[in-house]
Amino acid sequence: MSTLTFIESTPEALIEKINESIKLQLEDFKKNLNTHDPDELLSRKEACLFLKIEQTTLYHWQRGGKIKMYGIGNRRFLKKAELMAVPYTHLTLPTNPYG
Image (cartoon, rainbow, N blue to C red; front, side, top):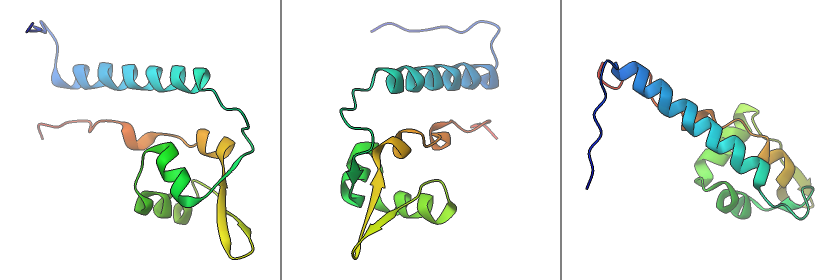
C-alpha cells in the first residue's frame, strides 16, 4: 500500500482540488453517457435508480424546483434528459471539515 505526502498544502486547498476533480469527472461522465432516448420518461423508482439517490432526495428536489414531474393519469414521470441536467451540487465536499 502506498502513501501520499502533501507538502505545503492546506486542508482547504486539498478539498478544493478534490472538488475540482469530482466536477471534471462528472462532466466527462455526462459527455460519455450513452442515452438511447433522452426524452424517455422514467418513473420515480427508475429515476432514483438512474441517479443513484433515495426517493426522499427526489422528493426534496421536486419540492425545491430542481426537477419537474409530468403527470399521465394518476402517475408521475420525469424526463431522462432533464434529470441529466440536474446540477450535482450535493456532491461537493464541505468547505472546512476541521471546523
